[in-house]
Amino acid sequence: MNKEILFISDLHLNPEQLDDTGRLFIDFLQTQASATDALYILGDLFELWLGDDAILPAYQPYLEALRKLTDSGTSLYIIRGNRDFLLGDKFQSLTGAQLLKDPTVINLDGIPTLLMHGDLLCTDDIAYQQFRAMVHNPEWRQALFRKSMVERLELARKLRQESQAATGEKGTEIMDVNQQAVEEVLRSNNALQLIHGHTHRPAEHHFDLDGQPARRFVLPEWGEMGGGLRYGQQGLHNESYSLDPLVS
Image (tube, rainbow, N blue to C red; front, top):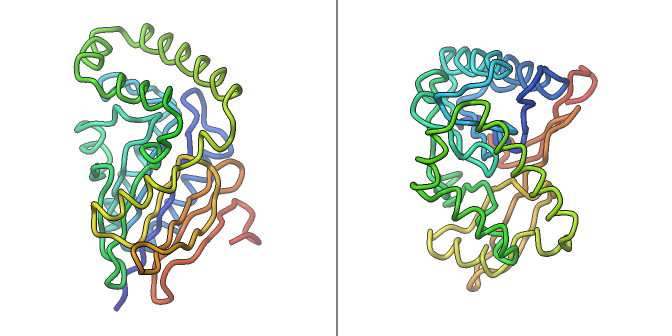
């Protein structure tokens, strides 16, 4: 019997209040996800994560819903994104999730499939890659963890403002993945299939990789509607999610 697996990313759950996306996500966990064997969230589940020692109160309903999901028997795997890169051991303990390395390879129908958030593939965006290296530096993180929650919030807001300003000045192609980077990471992981998020440009790309057919699936961003990929007896296919029962 084939497993049923769901792949989603880029929910950017609101750090201040439960909104339409949050309600949709909780409903999704209780319905779609709970009826499957595994759920993979490929980064940016949260718009902001200040650290496991500074969990924002608005996130409590999501943590409880994730715990109920794993208690029900669905396996939960999460790759950190560029917004929630500080997810750690306490988050795993609270939710029953397993944090995965970026990238991670799994097997789907005998096809080695690479899972990533996707930001590592945007190699043309040099300024972003420099920022990413900074926030993944252990010394930078140690300095952050010495700050209070209020100080971390202020720093996060400042970094977001700077990021939004910089994004407005960049060309769209710079912020997309680099095809050479895609091919290199597939080769280095002996994979022919890639699933990622981050760019908010949902699509299915087909290309040749050293004489073999390869595919790249880009997951959508969530808002009033959500979406992702389902793997089952018929392979991989797109799905959309809504609180409207007529949309499935």
